[in-house]
Length: 112
Length: 109
Figure 1: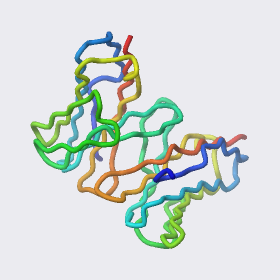
Figure 2 (figure 1 turned 120 degrees about the vertical axis):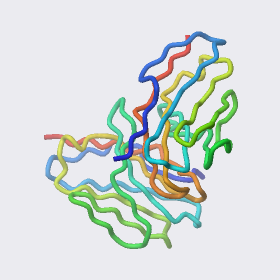
Figure 3 (figure 1 turned 90 degrees about the vertical axis):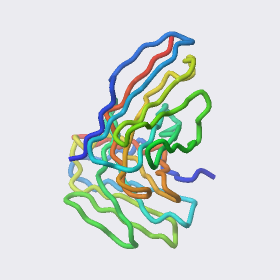
Figure 4 (figure 1 turned 180 degrees about the vertical axis):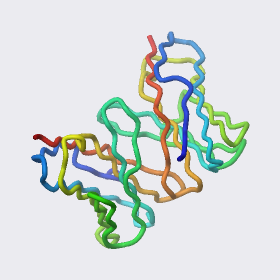
């Protein structure tokens, strides 16, 4: 079974803090993704990566950056957290582009 | 026009009935289509993949794809209260998945 693990299930941070969300997959998948999910807006792609050290912007990259130093790990960074970044963050991975993706358990981030 | 459209629901069906969930997409180059189930507070779980026109069955689930009409559907036979969840349709026009906003299904006893 594919396992995608996110470092935290719940997180509370203060406005202006730098926040790191970590994601690890154990299936040697090439592609990894970060989405955020908000009521009524669905899943929106923030960034994705198709190889180590490669990254592509998704639909809403502003205020975020990512890092992929190793194939199995994809980190999402909020440079200076703001209250409008309060959301559910979901990491996913897929073996190749265009095929099914598997999700981690999600991190519910609250910025106060 | 949204890339992937779903009726938000809720779709309410009685236990034992067939639930029919629909999805339309805008990009004709899409080749892969997926249905995910998401329980409240949980992450999406893949339940069906379909890549070619026609029907694909897996247990109580049947996915139907019509590329000419840009339409994909999910049928759930013998619906159970445990099927109550939000169902997300996803398509891939490029190398990333685009999701609809989901349809909330309620199965009542």
